Length: 150
Image 1 (tube, helix red, strand yellow):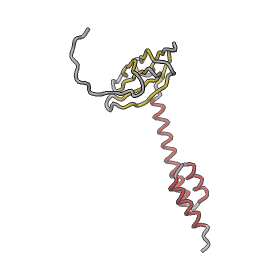
Image 2: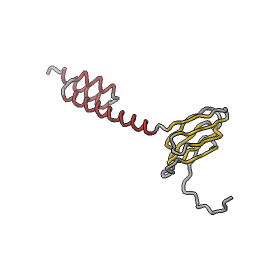
Image 3: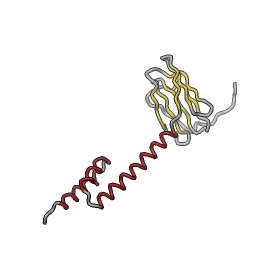
Image 4: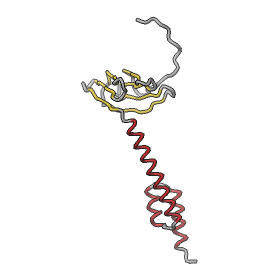
C-alpha cells in the first residue's frame, strides 16, 4: 500500500440526499461521476465543484460504477441485479440546445417583423406561443390603436 502524503482537500462535492457508494473520473480528468445509495449518479465538474447532471437508475443502491476508457459509456450495477449501460449524449444535448436557441432567435425575429408590419392578430398568436407577455401587451395596445376610429 502506498504510504504517500496527501494534500488538504481542494474541493468538496456534496451529495445532499444520500450516501455516495462509488465514484470514477473521466478520461480528460475534468469530471467525476459519483453513484449514490438512492439509485442515482451525478456528474461533477472538478474545476467548479458543481453538479452537471443527475441520472436516476432506479430505486436500489448502485454498488458498481465504471466507464470505458474513452468516456463514451458508463456502466452502473445496482442492488436490483441490473447492469445498465449509459451512453454519453452530451454532444447531442449541446446540438439540440443550439438548435432550439437558433429557432427561438428566428421566431423572435419573425415576431418583430410581423409587429413592424402591423399584422396584429398574427403577432398576438406568435407572442402567446413564444411566451412573451410584455410583447403581447404591446401587441394588444397595437390592436387597440388599429381599431381606434378617432
